[in-house]
Image 1 (cartoon, helix red, strand yellow):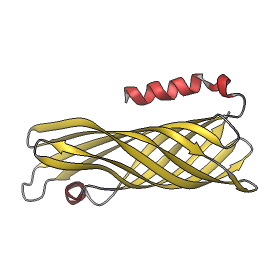
Image 2 (image 1 turned 90 degrees about the vertical axis):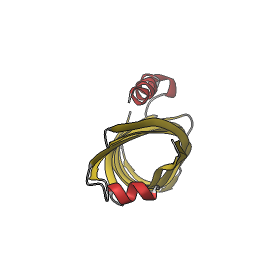
Image 3 (image 1 turned 30 degrees about the vertical axis):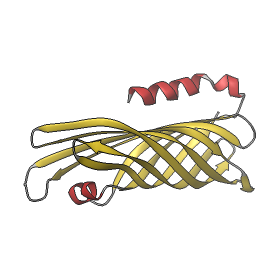
Image 4 (image 1 turned 90 degrees about the horizontal axis):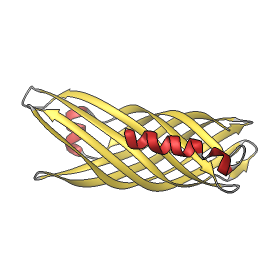
Length: 182
Protein backbone atom coordinates (compact mmCIF):
# COMPACT_ATOMS: atom_id res chain seq x y z
CA UNK A 1 0.00 0.00 0.00
CA UNK A 2 2.81 2.42 0.88
CA UNK A 3 4.50 1.77 -2.48
CA UNK A 4 1.29 2.58 -4.33
CA UNK A 5 0.78 5.84 -2.48
CA UNK A 6 4.38 6.93 -3.04
CA UNK A 7 4.18 6.30 -6.81
CA UNK A 8 0.82 8.05 -7.16
CA UNK A 9 1.94 11.08 -5.12
CA UNK A 10 5.21 11.37 -7.08
CA UNK A 11 3.42 11.24 -10.42
CA UNK A 12 0.86 13.79 -9.19
CA UNK A 13 3.63 16.17 -8.12
CA UNK A 14 5.29 15.73 -11.50
CA UNK A 15 2.24 17.26 -13.24
CA UNK A 16 3.90 20.57 -14.12
CA UNK A 17 6.79 18.69 -15.75
CA UNK A 18 4.33 17.05 -18.15
CA UNK A 19 2.58 20.34 -19.00
CA UNK A 20 -1.13 21.15 -18.98
CA UNK A 21 -3.76 18.51 -19.75
CA UNK A 22 -1.19 15.72 -19.52
CA UNK A 23 -2.04 14.04 -16.19
CA UNK A 24 -4.89 11.54 -16.20
CA UNK A 25 -6.39 10.34 -12.89
CA UNK A 26 -8.94 7.55 -12.75
CA UNK A 27 -10.84 5.35 -10.35
CA UNK A 28 -12.35 2.09 -11.41
CA UNK A 29 -13.79 -1.27 -10.58
CA UNK A 30 -12.11 -4.48 -11.74
CA UNK A 31 -13.40 -7.99 -12.16
CA UNK A 32 -10.65 -10.62 -11.90
CA UNK A 33 -10.62 -14.32 -12.74
CA UNK A 34 -7.71 -15.53 -10.63
CA UNK A 35 -5.06 -17.61 -12.42
CA UNK A 36 -4.54 -20.06 -9.54
CA UNK A 37 -6.91 -23.08 -9.57
CA UNK A 38 -6.58 -23.63 -5.78
CA UNK A 39 -7.49 -19.98 -5.15
CA UNK A 40 -10.55 -20.32 -7.41
CA UNK A 41 -11.62 -23.55 -5.66
CA UNK A 42 -11.33 -21.92 -2.23
CA UNK A 43 -12.47 -18.32 -2.80
CA UNK A 44 -14.61 -18.61 -5.90
CA UNK A 45 -13.96 -18.21 -9.61
CA UNK A 46 -13.79 -14.42 -9.62
CA UNK A 47 -13.44 -11.34 -7.47
CA UNK A 48 -14.12 -7.66 -7.89
CA UNK A 49 -12.17 -4.79 -6.40
CA UNK A 50 -11.59 -1.03 -6.58
CA UNK A 51 -8.57 0.48 -8.25
CA UNK A 52 -6.95 3.86 -8.76
CA UNK A 53 -4.57 4.85 -11.57
CA UNK A 54 -2.55 7.83 -12.73
CA UNK A 55 -0.83 8.50 -16.03
CA UNK A 56 1.42 11.25 -17.32
CA UNK A 57 1.60 11.82 -21.07
CA UNK A 58 5.11 12.58 -22.32
CA UNK A 59 4.08 13.11 -25.94
CA UNK A 60 0.82 13.25 -27.88
CA UNK A 61 -0.10 9.56 -27.52
CA UNK A 62 2.42 7.98 -25.11
CA UNK A 63 2.41 7.99 -21.33
CA UNK A 64 3.87 6.49 -18.16
CA UNK A 65 1.33 5.06 -15.76
CA UNK A 66 0.89 3.47 -12.36
CA UNK A 67 -2.06 1.88 -10.62
CA UNK A 68 -3.13 0.11 -7.48
CA UNK A 69 -5.96 -2.24 -6.56
CA UNK A 70 -6.72 -4.52 -3.64
CA UNK A 71 -9.05 -7.47 -3.13
CA UNK A 72 -9.98 -9.27 0.09
CA UNK A 73 -11.80 -12.61 0.06
CA UNK A 74 -13.11 -14.83 2.86
CA UNK A 75 -14.05 -18.50 2.49
CA UNK A 76 -14.42 -21.84 4.19
CA UNK A 77 -11.54 -24.10 3.19
CA UNK A 78 -12.99 -27.15 1.39
CA UNK A 79 -12.95 -30.36 3.44
CA UNK A 80 -11.56 -28.60 6.55
CA UNK A 81 -14.53 -26.34 7.37
CA UNK A 82 -12.23 -23.61 8.67
CA UNK A 83 -12.25 -19.94 7.68
CA UNK A 84 -9.52 -18.53 5.45
CA UNK A 85 -8.85 -14.95 4.39
CA UNK A 86 -6.91 -13.83 1.35
CA UNK A 87 -5.73 -10.29 0.64
CA UNK A 88 -4.10 -9.54 -2.68
CA UNK A 89 -2.71 -6.13 -3.63
CA UNK A 90 -1.87 -5.23 -7.20
CA UNK A 91 0.61 -2.42 -7.88
CA UNK A 92 1.60 -1.82 -11.49
CA UNK A 93 3.62 0.67 -13.50
CA UNK A 94 4.64 0.86 -17.13
CA UNK A 95 4.09 2.54 -20.47
CA UNK A 96 0.95 3.15 -22.46
CA UNK A 97 -0.15 4.27 -25.88
CA UNK A 98 -3.41 6.22 -26.43
CA UNK A 99 -4.16 6.94 -30.11
CA UNK A 100 -7.38 8.62 -31.22
CA UNK A 101 -9.69 6.30 -33.16
CA UNK A 102 -12.46 8.71 -34.09
CA UNK A 103 -13.70 11.86 -32.37
CA UNK A 104 -13.80 11.23 -28.60
CA UNK A 105 -12.90 7.52 -28.91
CA UNK A 106 -9.36 6.46 -28.04
CA UNK A 107 -7.70 3.05 -28.01
CA UNK A 108 -5.57 2.20 -24.97
CA UNK A 109 -2.65 -0.23 -24.87
CA UNK A 110 -0.51 -0.70 -21.73
CA UNK A 111 2.29 -2.98 -20.59
CA UNK A 112 4.53 -2.94 -17.57
CA UNK A 113 5.72 -4.54 -14.38
CA UNK A 114 3.40 -5.57 -11.57
CA UNK A 115 4.12 -6.21 -7.91
CA UNK A 116 1.54 -8.75 -6.81
CA UNK A 117 1.42 -8.89 -3.02
CA UNK A 118 -0.47 -11.52 -1.08
CA UNK A 119 -1.39 -12.48 2.44
CA UNK A 120 -3.35 -15.60 3.26
CA UNK A 121 -4.52 -16.60 6.69
CA UNK A 122 -6.01 -19.96 7.63
CA UNK A 123 -5.61 -22.79 10.15
CA UNK A 124 -3.84 -20.32 12.45
CA UNK A 125 -1.06 -19.78 9.90
CA UNK A 126 -0.25 -16.77 7.73
CA UNK A 127 1.61 -16.81 4.45
CA UNK A 128 2.55 -13.46 2.97
CA UNK A 129 4.88 -12.18 0.32
CA UNK A 130 5.28 -10.38 -2.95
CA UNK A 131 6.06 -11.53 -6.46
CA UNK A 132 7.12 -9.38 -9.41
CA UNK A 133 5.40 -10.13 -12.67
CA UNK A 134 3.89 -8.28 -15.58
CA UNK A 135 0.64 -6.67 -16.67
CA UNK A 136 -0.75 -6.03 -20.13
CA UNK A 137 -4.07 -4.52 -21.09
CA UNK A 138 -5.99 -2.96 -23.93
CA UNK A 139 -9.11 -0.89 -23.83
CA UNK A 140 -11.32 1.84 -25.15
CA UNK A 141 -11.72 5.35 -23.69
CA UNK A 142 -14.35 7.95 -24.45
CA UNK A 143 -12.82 11.34 -23.67
CA UNK A 144 -14.98 14.47 -23.69
CA UNK A 145 -13.12 17.66 -22.74
CA UNK A 146 -11.48 16.89 -19.38
CA UNK A 147 -13.44 13.78 -18.36
CA UNK A 148 -13.29 10.23 -19.62
CA UNK A 149 -14.73 6.76 -19.09
CA UNK A 150 -13.31 3.47 -20.27
CA UNK A 151 -13.30 -0.29 -20.33
CA UNK A 152 -10.16 -2.45 -20.33
CA UNK A 153 -9.34 -6.11 -20.59
CA UNK A 154 -5.96 -7.30 -19.41
CA UNK A 155 -3.85 -9.81 -17.58
CA UNK A 156 -1.69 -9.73 -14.44
CA UNK A 157 0.79 -12.57 -13.96
CA UNK A 158 3.37 -13.61 -11.39
CA UNK A 159 4.23 -16.99 -9.96
CA UNK A 160 6.43 -18.51 -7.31
CA UNK A 161 6.56 -20.90 -4.38
CA UNK A 162 5.18 -20.64 -0.88
CA UNK A 163 6.88 -23.49 0.95
CA UNK A 164 6.42 -26.48 -1.36
CA UNK A 165 3.32 -25.04 -2.98
CA UNK A 166 3.47 -23.46 -6.45
CA UNK A 167 1.29 -20.36 -6.65
CA UNK A 168 0.01 -18.19 -9.47
CA UNK A 169 -0.97 -14.61 -8.76
CA UNK A 170 -3.06 -12.36 -10.95
CA UNK A 171 -5.29 -13.46 -13.77
CA UNK A 172 -7.60 -12.09 -16.42
CA UNK A 173 -9.05 -8.70 -15.56
CA UNK A 174 -11.86 -6.55 -16.93
CA UNK A 175 -12.04 -3.00 -15.59
CA UNK A 176 -14.48 -0.12 -15.84
CA UNK A 177 -13.06 3.30 -15.04
CA UNK A 178 -13.82 6.99 -15.03
CA UNK A 179 -11.58 9.95 -14.51
CA UNK A 180 -10.37 13.34 -15.54
CA UNK A 181 -7.29 14.96 -17.00
CA UNK A 182 -5.55 17.98 -15.62
